[in-house]
Length: 596
Image (cartoon, rainbow, N blue to C red; front, side, top):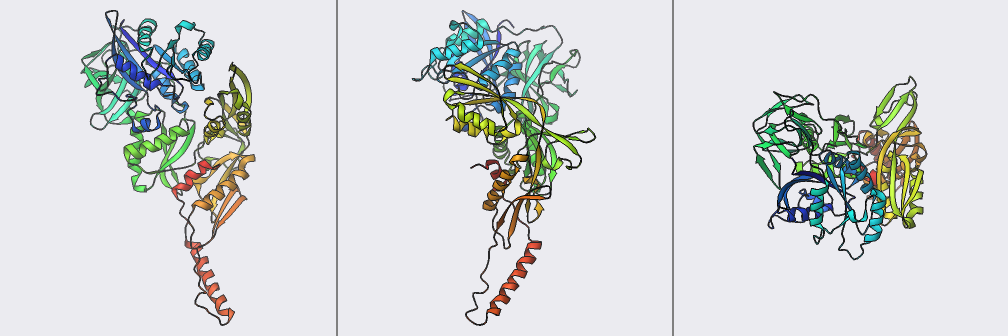
């Protein structure tokens, strides 16, 4: 146990965590030259295409320092705000963290929020300044920012480059010398913390865990405390580039267990594994439950695929514990699931993964956030879908979730960013200068306002320089309205939204105009209306596709033409009564991008 070090790498998105992890793996000879590729730990196609880390990845390295052999367990973590739950899980399994800051960009919003998470778990922090090989690096200024943030000494900051390998030896030495070894009692009853799990179609569910107390052997009869289920530990081992079986795992080790578990509900991230014969007294505490921020309906395109979709989402949930789902049905779309995501990027990634990994084509409804409706009797109703909102006559008031948003930007972009936040109903709480030309703005604003396009707009206003992070606050009363979209008088429940009352007319007009472009023309006129209750606030009409029935009349009495037109009009009227309008998948997605 003295020679084990468990650490993670935390940083803002695109500050070079994965590349730095590559150099560590190379230097410790964990990965051979043949196996080496860029971002070796990002094994998902999506991660490579987008250049972001989505999953945290664990890997074990051997390192020799001063003739003594050490085992280093590295967990690489994502940097995007939507995957902060992955970071919290990694932090729970570590004793130290490398805080990586880009020497060309300085401290960003996620750097600060991930750092606070690590400090709350009492992790030892090693500051690393990455990308020192870049011509536009600003080492002195960035060092000043790190000292301001951490209160460390200038000589504690390691200058490194993930590309050239500069400073990697210093990092490995600092990990061994500064990060404490795991603390635990090898003779106590077994206690293991599950921090991740994956689904393997041949071997069932594989759980990743850290041994906190005691030891575990292959073949032991173990119990998962939260579910109460018992299993044989068919195979245990450590996580190298592939799984590496071992006979025993001791206190402080990080490894995996395969025990033939087939159903995803039996493995919960944050659960404790113990022995059946000599169980531990209580489960490991301090693991936070995930709180979804954005809800959307996911429906199969064909209703026959409902069960396949359920199985696919269950398998995805194993690999991504921050995804929550429950069955629901819609008049327009049939049976599907109400899913909870941590943000819009998370939702996009889940959709992509369902398509690529499970071959599921799905329709996604307009995302929204959870509201609370307080009735006149004082009852609190949780509202996840617009259709679940009680009648206006019953409601006393509606409350919506607020967040504390941190924006870090260059001082030249303060004006446009403040305008954006004010338009999104934000209230400025604090403005702090981190450096001469870098400022941190703190806002309180409704979560619903940042769900759609806030992040994209922020990036375009600041030319990519602003970084953004948020933490949930409490629910506050708000003036909300439920807006329905009607096609020929029929409600399309999948397009209904809950919106701030003052913005409703503008949003209604934009939605109607957008749908007019996207819904194909029919043989009859189609009226698209946006309504709040019985009041129509916007309308567009899609004109019918017409055939010129008077073409064969050349000359003669006008009453002949009129007779043909009247006959056509009757047919159109009859068609309108029995005809139904198909809403294409593009229309559901277009509502998300109303401003384009």
